[in-house]
Amino acid sequence: MLKRLMIVAALGLAACAPPPERLAMAPLTSDLELRPLVGSVMVRPVTLPTYAALEEIAFETPNGLIASNADILWADDQQRAVTLTVTRNLADILNTNVVPEPWPFVGLPDVAVDVQVERILAGADGNFQLTGQFYVGGDGIDFRNSSQAFAIAKPMADQSLGSIATAQAAALLDLSEQIARTLGR
Image 1 (tube, rainbow, N blue to C red):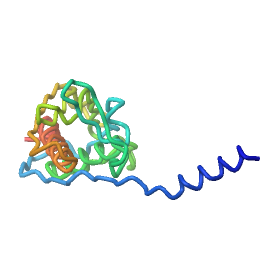
Image 2: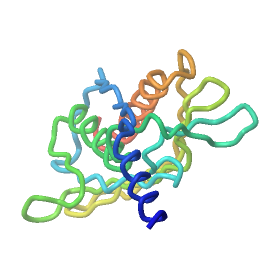
Image 3: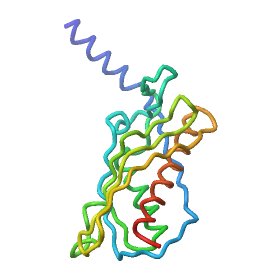
Image 4: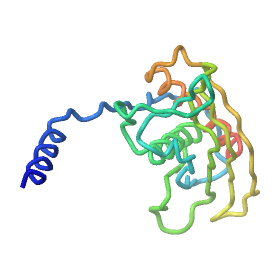
C-alpha cells in the first residue's frame, strides 16, 4: 500500500512540473531570385544526425562533446522544421511549386531534392556548422542528376539559444540558395 501511495504522489508531483520552454527558428528570407529550370520540386525529409533529430537543442562543449539542455526544446520536430524551412526557402527563391514529400499533386514532380546532413551543430568555436550532401534528380522530367557537398559555417553572436536558432536559420538559408542554384539561373 505504501508503495502504491508513493507512486501516486510521484505522478502527482510530475504533473505539477512546468512544461519545458520551446524555441522556434527565426524565419529568414533570401534576396536571391532565380528563374527556375523546372516547374515543380519535391523535397524529401531531410536526414539529420541522431543528436539533431531530438527535441533538445544540441551544442558542442569546449572539450568537443555534444551536449543539450532538456529545459528548453525546439518548438517543432527538427526533421520536419528543417525540411519545411528548405522547402519554403526554395519556393521563395525559385517562385515555382516546391513541396515536401509526400507529393500531393497528380503525376510526378519534375525533380526531387534529398538532403543528407552530417553535422548541424552550434560549435564551441562560436560558429554554427552545417555540413553534408544534397542530391537533385529528375523524377518527372529528364534533368541532370547531381550531388554536391556543402560545408556552411555561420558565426553566432554568442552561445545563447536565440543565437543558435538564428545561426541555424541562416545556415539553412545558405544551403537553400546552393540547392536553388542547381535548379535555376
